[in-house]
Image 1 (spheres, rainbow, N blue to C red):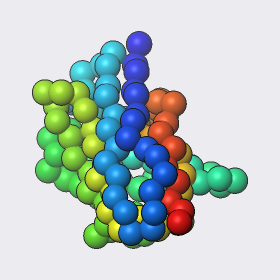
Image 2: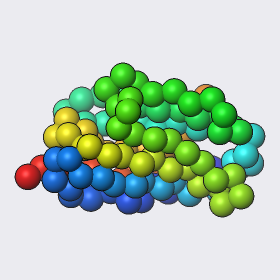
Image 3: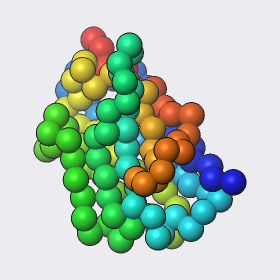
Image 4: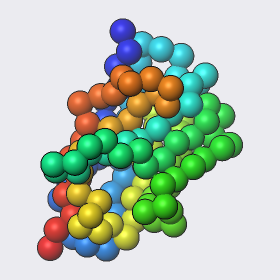
Length: 114
């Protein structure tokens, strides 16, 4: 059974930072491309970043380029998202997923507010 468990969210002031983690189990993590997506209140899912299985090919949506960094540790079966210079519009529930699949975890909530 595929399991993805996100953590690291919370309340942060504008300009602050958070590091999200996603621990994977139930599949061979190291062979899958992975992504982060988010869902803001009242909005649909938004793809924000992807990383290939080896960590060498990385993509970001324009709104987070230069502020967010995706990475992975295949030995730990863990995906990360370092988020810096956070803005109120980054407020959302963040999910990790296998890029080519719709499965995702319960998510971790990020609230950016003063």
